[in-house]
Length: 326
Image (tube, rainbow, N blue to C red; front, side, top):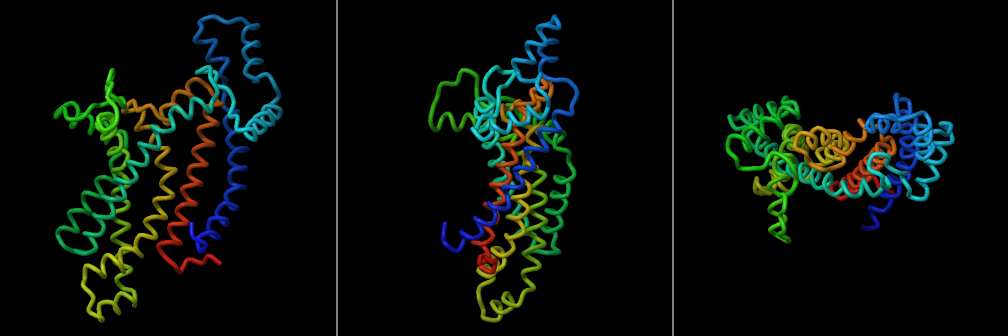
C-alpha cells in the first residue's frame, strides 16, 4: 500500500469500528426476539423430551441465563475470537463457518468478477454505439436480466443446461467419488460452479452494463476528453485511457455495495443448486433455531462487507488521484 493511500485506509477503518459494534448488538437482540430456541428443535427431533431434559439442554447451551448475561457472554467470547457452540452440528461455530466459507467466497467472487467483466464490456460497447441497434439490443437483454427473479432464473438455467442439454450438473460442488487433484479437480469444480455463478451474476450484469454506459457518456462530455480529441489522440485510446478509467469509479462503488446483496442472493442460489456454502448453512440454522451459527454468519458477512468497502475506497483513490487523502 502506497503512502498516498494510507490515510484513506485508516479513515475507513476507524469509521467501520462503530458499525461493527452496532451490528453485534442489533443482531443478538433481534435474533433472540424470535420464538423458540435450539432446545425446542432438539426436543422435537428426538421425538420425546421431559421437562428435566429440556432444562438440562438449555443449561448446557447457556439458554437458561438472563438475556443480558447471554449477551455479555457472547461479547466476551467475541473478544477471544470464540463465536460460540453450534447446537445443531455439535462443534464450535467458527469451525462450521470456516468449513463453508471458502465455497461461498468462491461462488461470490466468481459471480462478481463475471458480472463486472461482462457488464463493463457490454456497457463499453453500448456507449461507443449509443443510439444504434447494438445499443438497443444489449439494453433489451440487460433489462431482461434485471427483471428475472433469481430463483426463476436459477431454475431455468437448470432446465436448459442440465435437463435439456445435459452440459452441466444441476447441484452439488464436486463429483461424488472424484479423486483427482490440481487442474483436474479445478475443472471438475468449475462444472458445478458455472450455473450457480451465472445465476447469481445475471442481475448484476444488467446493472453494471447500464451504469457503465451512463458513466461513459457523461465522461465523454468532460472538457479534458474534448481536449484529448482536439489533440488528435486515437479514439480507442481516448475511450480506454481517458473515458473508461474515470467511468469505472461509480461502477466500483456500486460493486462494493453489491457485495452484501450477493451474500443475500447466495442463500437462494446455494439452496437451489445445493451448493454447500454460508447461504445454505444459514438456511439450515434458521430451521434449527441455531442462533449461535446465525450470529456468526451475520457477523462474518458484515465484516466481509466492511472489508470490501474499505478496498473500494482504496480502489477509488487509485483510479482517481483527485480523491482527497490528506
